Length: 85
Figure 1 (cartoon, rainbow, N blue to C red):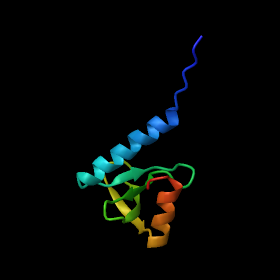
Figure 2 (cartoon, helix red, strand yellow):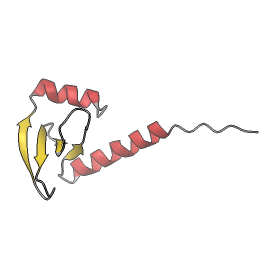
Figure 3 (tube, helix red, strand yellow):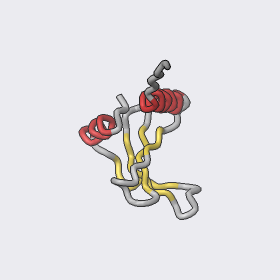
């Protein structure tokens, strides 16, 4: 019997990397939701220029507003935490 090893985590990580590149190339932010770290209805928005914002969605999720902009050091730590570079 032959055993096939498949690294699902690597495949998903590669797909997310490609999605991030496509979003940035199209001029859109890449959104990261972390329910363990951010309150409900909040997410990170990472832009191609390196800016990272914490945003909060309205109750109907049709719009959002900026809660804060991460400084340079926090933006680097954000990318390291979520393995985005």
